[in-house]
Length: 183
Image 1 (spheres, one colour):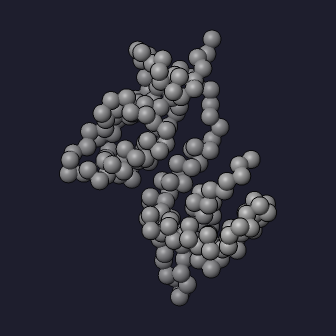
Image 2 (tube, rainbow, N blue to C red):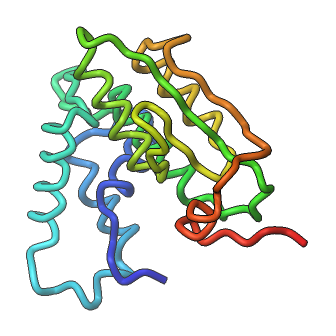
Image 3 (cartoon, rainbow, N blue to C red):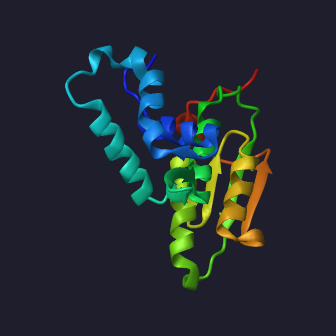
């Protein structure tokens, strides 16, 4: 079990599970969930730390505040939903490598530079490595993640996803990802 708590993931999961969550309710619920991890964490004021993390999620555009019946509520933005899906996919048990490479290519105009940078950062954070300028490679199934990016960034056909069975000179990639070839 990890000693480090990923509050970003926990807050996003809590908000997603509840749908919309009252801000005043967030801290007590999260604190109850985290109680087993907090015994060693008395060096700082945890409620303050939790509020700081929530503010950062708001600033980063992962959460938004809605007002309903005079109460402030937290909900996920599209970016927050994508980040949560990223966490969920990353938490899945890594399957045995099937010997196939997942390749993503994209051709995005200079006028959409900011969206292109978001795309590049998302696939890099997911674990892809750059094979060539706009060509990225990953060893495991990730079509759901790529489809989500296509939809959220409105790129459609500008992003291509391929499953490649044979790739020459892939020894360095196999070593980089720590893969084992099936006998």
